Image (tube, rainbow, N blue to C red; front, side):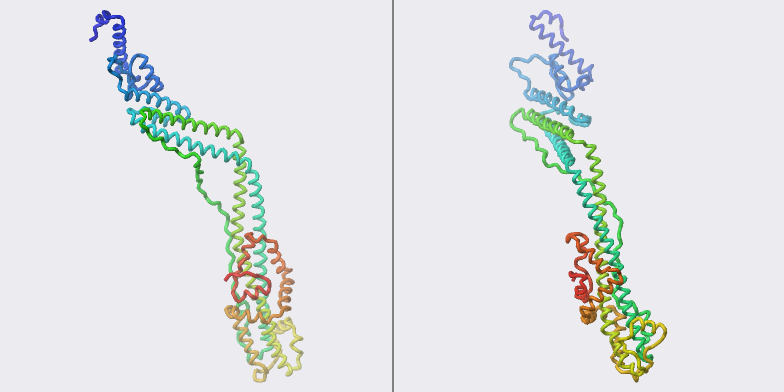
Length: 506
């Protein structure tokens, strides 16, 4: 119990000290007992305000929980603990740092919840400051990335119009080449179909001659009903790959990396007792760098119209999608071009082989047999009989020679040619083996005549087909598709002779 009467009897200086002691006790009791809100810093915005108020009353502010304790007059030989004094300074500096950082954040609630309450010791303060340094360094690194993005977009404003024009030109060129490839496929397939029909006409022609001049008792059953034979002995064409619709690929958005501003490690503690204060100062400098980066971002954003850029980016995306679709279609069409061209070369070679065979072997042998035996009937020479005439007579059921095999001259050699012809008709493998030997019988005039005949029949499709490839860029998809033609090896020299291909796959 304090005796107030005793206080009044003291000397003025002693009386003043005693009254301050009493007031501090009363204030401390009020804060501790009756002002729990003040203990939790209710009524104060931060620790610094609370500490200043407490000192103004002559008290000592203590953390965890925050409280203001009356200050007793120390003896001359007694000093306050150094650690408490140092921690109080660190807490004040820490509180000011938290205030500054919180003011610069768009949403400071989570930050306040994690960092507002000050640590209880210098060691805990050191660990907290390391965490806070990393937090600010992360802010700086992220903001540096945003600045990099802003600078990149400002540059994009200058180049994106040219980029759009470039993609549009590229797309137009690709679409034009795709149309040419599509036309080439159509022409090649039409030509290959015609050539297959032309080869079948030559097969029918030779069978007409056999049926017309062969003695009935030596006529093979196969030739009597030759309709099923026509079209056999030919390599089947490869089916064209099916064109698939373009489907836009799904791509994940990969964030850009910004290595220009890496997170710096917190400077190591020194033996200096103010190391936590030094850390706080380091964090202030790092935070100032963060604010500088934010200001720089605002300056860069003022240099260009972000809305206009977004519009141009959407336009660029549309033309890029058209380009990607044209690239996709071009790759598929290139596969069709390759197959169609190979089918065309194969059918051209087979037609040339059959034309050469019919001209120099089968019909030649039929004419020879006819001339040897026509003296029985005083008939015209075989050279005076046309293919159309033979076809009409056979269709009418007429034969050139009413002769039995036993009285025919050169019958064995003639029948040997018939057997070879039937073998060729029945087996494409046989035709592949004998193609070089047969084609070697053709004269240069035969080759020119063959190409001329095909051009006349098809309104110059041979020349048109070749013209499709005359002005191609060597690196274009179209030109690459025509390289390395894949045809049977026995056909390759014949294709070269006809001028249809120069480069072949092994």
